[in-house]
Length: 111
Length: 116
Image 1 (cartoon, chains in turn green, yellow):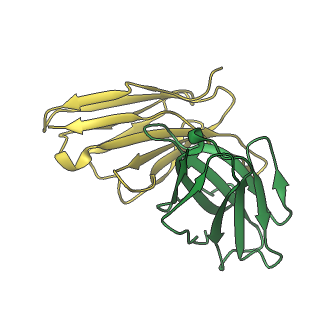
Image 2 (cartoon, rainbow over the protein chains, first blue to last red):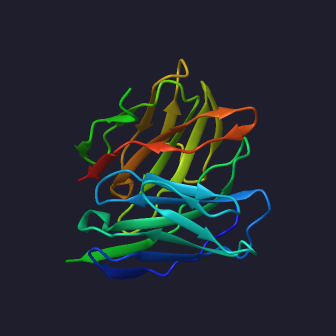
């Protein structure tokens, strides 16, 4: 699976949009971009995934560049409960695939 | 079905003792994964099962570690002769894999092991 690069941390103000970047320049054509988050002392929680089109669900939006070498997770109105570590992962949906986590980005939402 | 359950949530044990953790996946999920997470790091893959078959083991899984999924339902992870370096959060996840494709993971809340 391709590797991802994320900055170690960022912060944003409550109520504002949080834009979390991720680089995955070696992504293969059959690999998806997944985002998970982990709130302190809990297991990772699935947020969203996409292949090449932008995706939106009730939690977030995922914007993938046309060349698929980077993506941005957008939390449109961040709340204090969104403070967490966010993991960007690239993986195929193949039968032998598994999720490989990096260190992620720590998002701190300030009041 | 309320998701992936792990038991216990916390375990403190003395060095040299054996410990066993249990994971109950989402019932319709045929894949089950074990991960380990230490402070400040992302989860690291240990092993996974498809139904009752253990298909892959990480190099992190030393001889002291053994995992089973006897009937393709719940799974246990046993650590023998625990060492202080085994202190970590042990996470279980499950997913559905059909037609050669693997779908999203659901994680449990983990078992935090402290070896003293």
